[in-house]
Image (cartoon, rainbow over all chains, first blue to last red):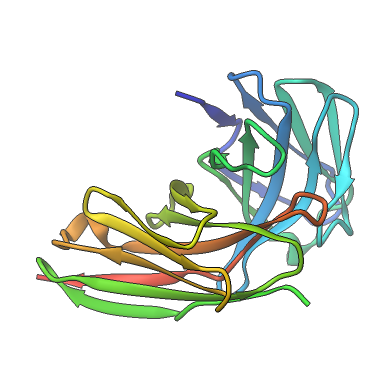
Length: 114
Length: 110
């Protein structure tokens, strides 16, 4: 089974801090994604990557950046955390670009910015 | 524009059947996903429909009509563990993105 592991389940950070959310997958998938999930807004795509060192902006990239130095690891960076970035962050990976075999999601990181 | 609509909440009784509808308007449509998400957990993949028609997987079935921009997820013999949110999502060939609906929260009553 594909496993997608997110380093932290819960995080509390202060406004202005730089925050790193780590995601590792163990099935050699090329495609990885970062979403945030908020009540009433559903899943929104922040950034995605189809290959090492490659990144593409999703629908809401402002205030975020990403890093994909190794195939198995996709990191989300909040350059200067703000309270409106309090959310559930979900990482996902897929076998192909269209995700036709489904995305496998990590268990999520609930980030609170105070 | 890209849009996916599904009901916010539904309630059904244990042992019954429930149908969760989803309509979509997307350019470059490829196929339609359904995911299940229990509270506080990650979404898990249920089904992916590319062709029109009904696909059955045990107690769960998913239907797609491409001409109508419509899909539904049918859950039979409901169990308490089926209480979850169900996410409809469209795969597109526009940057190969998947667009998620906001999810339908399904409550199962004993």
